Image (cartoon, rainbow, N blue to C red):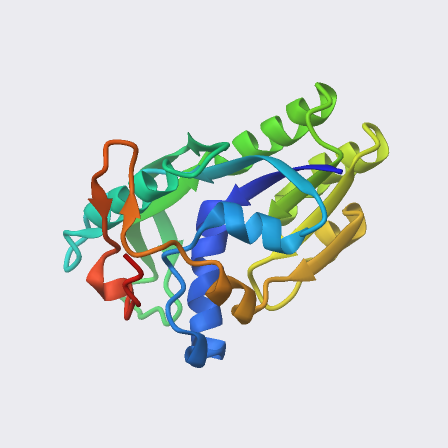
Length: 221
């Protein structure tokens, strides 16, 4: 069975944060080998393609190194065979919202809202295109975004491919569970088993080390 994996990067990132809180004994697990993870989720399938959907982050007050840490991880991922990275974008705009505890003098506040745009659309597009061009028999969708329910259902019912949805959160949303051929949650132990080596060696022989804050790590070089 030919398999392809479609990974919602930010949904997975926040899911891993929640996993660390629920099961701290398994560690950080952010130096994640996405190809190995997809293979672990369907060990009998022949994994042909892994698509990772994310967006470039910007430095924040108190965390100027955020873009550099992301870049290190993306460099490490690019060493994996048959893995491609697809970028959305972050958009920041002003919104006016009601205060949770308004006063006589102030009932509303104008705030900056930053939203990640494009990843869910990109994921749905490639999920459908790859099925249409007969590139897989099984799609592994790592996300818990209910907006993906309709493309998942279309792949299953109209294009007649199996779709396994794996939620990085504590449960699978009802819409995704109903749309998929099968669904499950990502177990902390699975993520812990699927870490990249330290260091990762790229095609030019350069060593790529994970950010120290993501440790501790066991050096296997």
